[in-house]
Length: 443
Image (cartoon, rainbow, N blue to C red):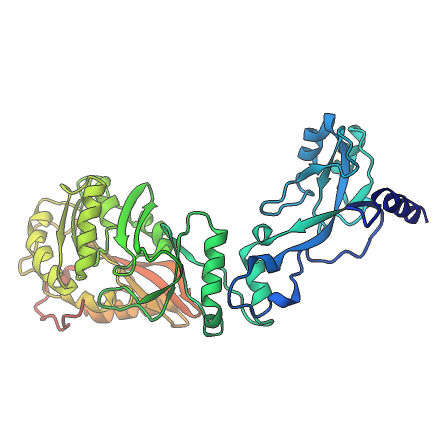
């Protein structure tokens, strides 16, 4: 009854439904802060104004003199919404007070405050009395997933995730999302500062050059990206080379295994994410890639990071690189007892290239302590992926690796598809085998 009297009193002062009213107890507020207007469902061309909506949120009236202390005490309960202030002017136009807006998911009645919050309010002389505040939410205040969930047909997956490559957001849209692709692209660009181009992959990765076709969904058609990874800078044409930001941890892991004075042979170097940081650590690097664009950007990035004197670059087929520059350099390195690493990051095919090491050298070294360490990547859809990649590596080498290697899980690429790295010391029985290599040139 008291609430009704107060509500009528406010109406009489405002002359219409006011922006604020006192409430206590559970008012049955909607469980979601934002419920989009029905007319945005199925929208194919983005109309930002159509998302505007006024909602009711709880608030506490706080004296200005203790405002900062109260805001700090209610940090967990206050509203968290892009572009929405937590503190607003008192709707009673009292200069001595402000309203602190609260999250309706957390606070539905005065008893919703935690014991610490309630004690803080009492200590600052703030009544544990909640008010309704009529809050206007616009498109700018919504998260990307909220916009897309409102637009796409109900019951279908909502995609708001993407890979960030410099100014480019790279998405992999599903078939049911394609009719909304331009709207999705615009939303992603709107909601992510610094993104000025959104692209969608249109086919699988080309195993030869490791790039894929893509279409621009929104923004500028500028595919030359500049990114930072592990403190280094890389520049490249994302539409013509391979780059995966999800591999930064793996790049760092392998590079940390190298030391000053080591030699690294990077068989499928791309634009340099293994080669360049290894050179920065003091390793001597021979980096190769078959893709002419990758080779060009590899050279550019070596200069960009000032390691061009530590890296020799090649534009060869992977097998030709192993049987050419690697074979030519290896005898002297073994003789000098230099630690050698061979990185083979082409997971779709790299395991098949291991046969290139069979009989690579014809004279056994004086010392076997520093035979090359191989880091070879592969995909597996097997129920036992570790066993699978070791078995395939053994078959390609023509030598059992089961007890002579370690397998590192890199990431899950897709449902039931893992990326792994097999690390092993190249067996002398393989390196000095009289059996000819059987593989064919392919990358």
